[in-house]
Image (cartoon, rainbow, N blue to C red; front, side, top):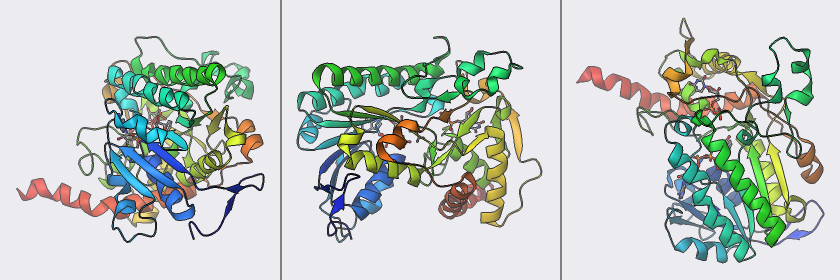
Length: 389
Ligand code: NAD
Ligand code: UDP
């Protein structure tokens, strides 16, 4: 039970209970982190966000075993003077706050750059000035495109891992031109990484930078028209879930040829736990967190999700389960894409001994079971409504 058994770090030392200021705690990753911190550790969380829907179950009722160890602070870090006080009274700050849906990068580039760079500046500054540890969430997108993507299509070098595996300490960051506003997010994240790194080098900031590689699972994003805007475009898991729930074809952007590696949120959270509780091994490092064994093209992902959804819902797939759309039609002007994202795991393995476990099929099965249970009825009602009027 949380709080009764002493926790030990990877070197066998007892871990003292700590206070964590978690910014963006109400989002997808934050909700999973809070859930595990409450149920498995004695740590206290000051949960900062503008929304709390995804962590409501942890905040209410007052009789929950961890009540008193999690406090929600509804504040926008853009303009709230309470932020410094919360960081000052914590041992560790975890910053997850960001605009991080690709549909926004080319359509709201200013908001994207402000959110991922300017709004993160005070967080870094307060941590540095008050000698507080910072775990900052960056992204695998800082790598941009692979070197291999610039080789001729038939070049045998494209098969050589040196041209596509993404390594924290050696891979370059390759973005498209400035007109391709897709890269506004990657560029802002890269600059905040460089700033944090420089604060570490020049002012002794104790930091860890996390580069998530497509973490997916329950509570990711929203289903348009149900718990998010009807016209909203979430990340691919929620887009495809929405299509499956509505019995519509899954939309493959530019043929669905891009490749991604997907990792189950619960595996990824284990890695973050190791960083939280092993500062001596995690500080000063940038970590890829992904599952190199779960690589698929987006088309293969669509096919697998269609199969898995049929299994968990008991419904046959529709006759034409996918449809091709152009990126311009789907995302608008200025979209571009990362071609392939396979994380190198050497550093995280060496420092924290961490490896992901869950296969793509298994993680889709548990996630789509959740999507079906949570949304199928609401979608049925939403579809029935217009015809009833
Ligand atoms: P999310 O959108 O679910 O969570 C972000 C949270 O930050 C939201 O709850 C949002 O309300 C909050 N937030 C944003 N701006 C804020 C502000 N000004 N003040 C207070 N709260 C604010 O996203 P997520 O998937 O949980 O991602 C968390 C972090 O991980 C982000 O920094 C993202 O860039 C990074 N990341 C995630 C993935 C992934 O696979 N999920 C991949 C790459 C990077
Ligand atoms: N994508 C797609 N159909 C959709 C949503 C996304 O084909 O309905 C593609 C998108 O173009 C990208 C991949 O799926 O190639 C992953 O998109 P996601 O939004 O999850 O974010 P990314 O991995 O690009 O950061």
